[in-house]
Image (cartoon, rainbow, N blue to C red; front, side, top):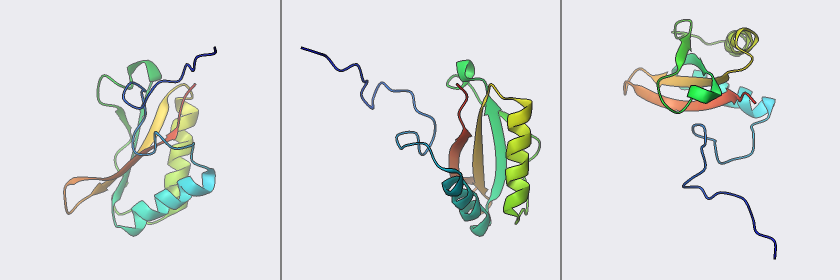
Length: 112
């Protein structure tokens, strides 16, 4: 009898908010970025090598984009980060200035 080799949700390493869902399409990523901007949250990009992604804070790519209202500017910075660190995971966080916390956080590019 064949045994399944899949892990359960309690032992599976996942990355951020959408970690249990299928990978986001480009349009879905753009929709999430638009949502962050529409909420007035501050987008920030972070990156980390997969071997170190679960044991400490990720490195920030530049400063957060305070007051950013243009989707294309955020996408261009995500792409620049990916070109600079092609072997890293890259995530986008939307910081809520009112609650002083994260309103959204998800991995945009997952390194292999």
